[in-house]
Length: 164
Image (cartoon, rainbow, N blue to C red):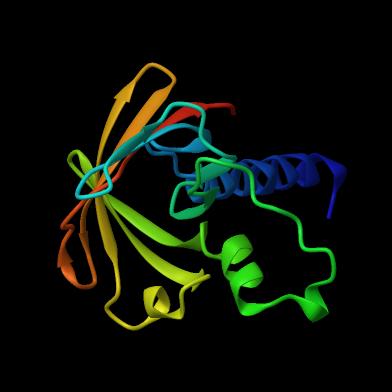
């Protein structure tokens, strides 16, 4: 191949690669990394946590990951995990939520389908959660609408601030 013909072929290959990569990096209004800044629960034990424990929610174009500590106080570190009692393990792992998988947006709601989760029931076929969401600048507020059991009885509203 002559050098005159290599340049257009090389340019075309680079342009095709760039276009393909751009198509795979779909963005949505939720795309980004969000830090938990508030949690409000409803129902018999309703409460508002304005200084919640750590939590992150990450959205890419098609996937999400969320982890947060649903507690008013920091969790106590286990001294020796191999000797921890059931109550000590529950105190550490009970208030921790973790799930990652795929999501889709429809209007002002999004539905998640967990591929991996702390709670195995959230990974069962057909198990999904739907949340309503509201964006205001760098603030995202979500409220659970529905889960695998049906409409959310006492939905929590979680407020996030975009950090990336």
